[in-house]
Length: 353
Ligand SMILES: C=CC1=C(C)c2cc3[nH]c(cc4nc(cc5[nH]c(cc1n2)c(C)c5CCC(=O)O)C(CCC(=O)O)=C4C)c(C)c3C=C
Ligand SMILES: [Fe+2]
Ligand SMILES: [Fe+2]
Image (cartoon, rainbow, N blue to C red):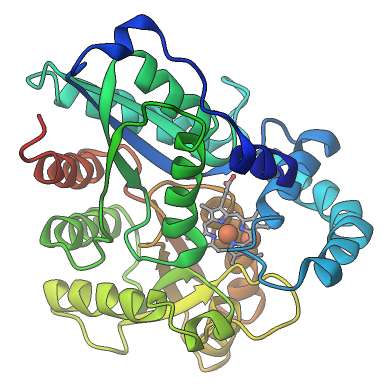
C-alpha cells in the first residue's frame, strides 16, 4: 500500500456490500496465510515498485519521513532495484515466472486447503504484505466468498514489529474500507511451539544425512533487525535465541555446535549481532573447515536464504579458508513444514470451524 492508499484508507467511506452480506451470518471462516512479499519481476520497474512499498513502511524504517524520503527516492531507489534485481534473477522460478517465495507460499496455501477438507466451512487463501497478491485484495475475496471470520496467519515464527505486526496492520487497513468487516483472530508467534521445534530438528537431521561431510558447526541464521528496535522492546532477538536453544536441546548439541547469527543487514546503523557473514569468516580463519547454515526464521526459501546464504555467505566461507558448506532448506511446503502450519491453524480455529 502506498502512502496515498493509506490516506485513502483512513478517509474512505465503507463500500456497499453485496446482498448476501446482509444475512445474519454468512458462516464461513477464511484462513489467510500472510507472507512478506516479493517483486513481480526482476527488471528495474517491478523491483522499484516492490522496494518502494516495502521501504516506505514506517514499521520497517522508522526515520522521520522528511529525512527518509529524500534518501529513499534519491539514493536507495535509484541503485537498489538494479542490484537486487540481479540477485533475484539468479533464483527466479523461470517455469512459473515468479520468485520462490511466491511459489512456496501458494503451495503452502493449496496444501493447507487440501489438509483442511474436513472443515467444510473454511476457505484458505494467501496474500503478501508488499506486492501481489496484496493483503487487501485477498481479504476482500474472502469476504466476498462469505467469510465473516478471518484467521490471519503471519508466516513468521518469531514476532517482530517489522513483520508480524505490519502484516496484521495491513489486514486491518483493508477492513477499514468495509462496512461489514469480518471478525479477526491472529495466530501468535510460534518460536517455541513443539511442532515447530520438532520440524526444524527433523529437517536438520534429514539434510545432514544427505551430506558427504559432518559439519563442525551449524549456524541458525535469522534475518536481522536494527539493534535500536530491539533495545526499544521488540522481542524478536529473544524469540530467535529461544528457538535455537530448543532445537539445540532437541538435537542434544552443544552451544558451540549450533550458534545463532543474524543476516541481511540494510543501511549503516548497527543491527542485531553476531552477524552471519562476519561469523563464517571468523570460523574459517579459526580453522573450521565444514559448516552448514539453516534459516529457522524463514518459513520459505527466498532471496535471503537462497542467494544471500546459499551463494554470498558460502563464497565468503570458502574464500576465508573453509572447505565444505551446505545450506539447509527452509521448511517450505515439506510434510514437516505443513504439519507446523496445519497444527497451528487447527488449534487457533477452535470454536470457529
Ligand atoms: C530495511 C530494513 C529491513 C528490515 C527491518 C527487515 C526485516 C525483516 N525481513 C524479513 C524477511 C524477509 N526480508 C526479505 C527481503 C528484504 N528485506 C529487506 C529489508 C528489511 N527487512 C529488503 C530491502 C529486502 C528485499 C531484498 C533486497 O533488496 O535485499 C525477504 C525475501 C523476499 C523475497 O522476495 O524473496 C524476506 C522473507 C524478516 C523475517 C525481518 C525481520 C525479522
Ligand atoms: Fe527483510
Ligand atoms: Fe539480503
